[in-house]
Image (cartoon, rainbow, N blue to C red; front, side, top):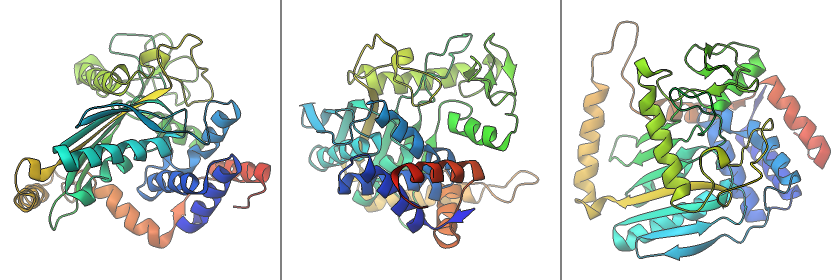
Length: 356
């Protein structure tokens, strides 16, 4: 089924208001969540709404948090999210990074006591309108086994970097540090399809195509899939995100990260507070004149667009191209949702008296 952005925004905002979010927070959280659906990252959009409600019901999300800076220097800060929706905490923290960059040239903010924050790219892209480079990282549910391990010790721990250009669209890289994010598995599960080899290992550490493999005690694999294809690099990237997001801020890290998924419970002996994020904002003119930089970014992007494609491919893409093109299309033609997602949302709506 296909829905307009407005229909899904109004529904999502109404659900969030019903769990006690203030008007401004509900609107912001709905916008962050739906940005994923618009950009084709369907695994992190409204399909996740019932998950946030579930965490609220378990008193793991504070609908009215007192988000505050608990430590800072002229260019850095630590933000305490007070258990709030990551969809609200993260934009607050990214704005702190931007405000510090306006004064100091760069701003760096680590966050503790937060929750799942939607797609990483939304927060990184906040910097673009200020002629800044934005960086967004977060740790996540411990579903990933390090190279050579059977244990689940890391999250999919995404990295997003947004870089402004002049006449060309911005460069926006937004990626998990695993071969695939868990949300991609959830989509395959809804479609009753297998996963590609290299995404998942079973409980014994053997690669499997079972899209339910993680739920059966297995694990997601780091980017690369196995040692021969560079999984040690994906493991290292995920570890860096975990350390920057949590060890630096005082949030939970590694296997202690409170999970978003329903089939795992939080560790009863946490090592920190909530889930962690890390944000950076770099003012371009702290390095060189912004117009010079953006002109050269145009040149960089233009040259890569001219790269000769391999056989069977039309063109070489710039990070952010597919999402940007899909967003333009979906704002006009609507957002398609799988039937299981629609059924889940309608069930959620019935509980709160909100019609989809």
